[in-house]
Length: 223
Length: 231
Image (cartoon, rainbow over the protein chains, first blue to last red):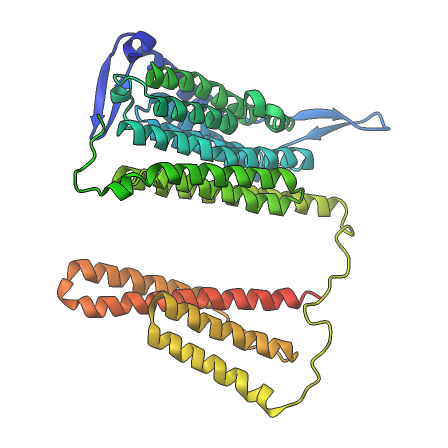
């Protein structure tokens, strides 16, 4: 499918040698929203959770320490920028790389929490993400082998051969696993159960946006 | 549609599909092993096998573009392994913080019986063999030489440890490693800047690699020794 039918009018292209970035209202909107959200995260302070204490009538505050706060903010900003990059990129492999980067950063954001249950689910999510790098990168390379290019602008003009379909299906599996949606959500959902709201939310938001972009890319490659 | 240069032999072209099948099969075996194994450290190592299968599939393409994909793929794989192992470490630390006496159980030594033999050959032979290995490693230079020399260092440390003697501590082994890097990079730089001194730069790079590998292998030996000391 042509990217004009998917994303609206073509506003222009930025040719960087082999990689051609194309600007459509769809991509620009996703890009701008993610950048705005990243800015919000850079400026905001983390939430403090109040938990009821067992067997007494007290409440306990679950706070985020200053060191942990700085680390999380840094990783969340990088995560936001990586997902923004995945929104605007015009190259199949750059997309997979941004995807893998988001996966690593998601683990990193929760890596310093004190709850062992959260760390446990982060570990399990990391294992899934690592295993899914095989279909993710493998799918991209199979598409490269079948068509000889990674540029989405060129790929959208080509008819899909069975090998391309196979590669696209592998890539879909990889994206589902790396972003932790649909069949692989079990461990990722548990990662959110800790204090520090805006930083935790970027984990959720990045995977949502990346799924939207992945649907566009798969449509471009397949139709 | 796909441009394949005419000088690429048919043998290479026909390798593509088997390579992809091999990668997918290795990945499948890896995931099966993960499903069977229940210890977390083993799972972590087994996921690395799946990552290697990814390298198979990517490198099967075999063009320069694919080569540009392998490097970030490897880096991503490495970064993920590091991140997950850090998570595992943090989690274990938290668990120990909550219950400090949990991991206190007696570990068995690799050498349960003390070596009481007192023979002349036990004093002289290990030193001699280690010296020969290190000398031969220096003579070889490069990667192989580094491995041989490092093997000599490991042998020395092990043989002294086996008799319960204190081992000479190699402090600053990281410094040696850093100097080796500098030698290596200097050699490469000289190779491009002044190609007429190619022999000098080759030897710089080779000696750097020797030091690097030897210090790495020696480090493994010293770490192992510290592992034995845990008792």
